[in-house]
Amino acid sequence: MSVIYLLISISIVVAVFFFLAFIRAVKKGQYDDDYTPSVRMLFDDELIKKASDDVIQITKKNPKP
Image (cartoon, rainbow, N blue to C red; front, side):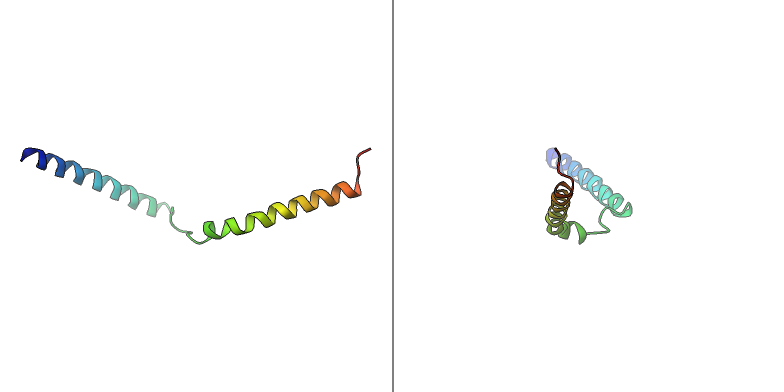
């Protein structure tokens, strides 16, 4: 029976630790912007494609000898 008390007390300490870590993360703004990261991956390809198109246009204007 003493093992159960030990396990319950350890689990409560771990739960309180994770709860405090969560509260600290919320106060520091970790979860402020939850929309942009999910949309950012949709626009990364367009930025890479635009950059590669710019490089192609520059090389066409100034071909290396």
